[in-house]
Length: 187
Image (tube, rainbow, N blue to C red):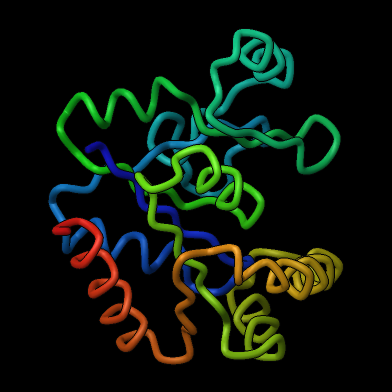
């Protein structure tokens, strides 16, 4: 059976770090590159970090039913998972690993059902999450405030995931997700 692993979390919870760790530990995994209409940040590259396309191109793909899931986060700021991306990975005999926001994670779990293991990465507290976002130094104060408010709301959805991992200690969180993946991939 083709499988997928879904990682979701509020921004700043350590989700991307844990996904990268899993990709290093499990050669049978392949990262699903999402589509977005936002501009690249920092060193992000098209086709590696995201497929960067215009809002019109994204809407065209919606009309073609090309997405497993998508959402318009802000006006003309879309994110989505292409069906072709999932098929590309499965055709290589690999398991798909997703790094998506909370709503995307819920949608993917509904779509894939028993083929999916969904993992919610919890920050130890809202205060710690805010500290992490500030120390990243990638966002202004207003953006951080918005992300913290969104995180509080997103944490109310944690029970819609198969697993919840609290990332208060990175090494412990890495061990926890490795155990979850081992159990799911080898069942």
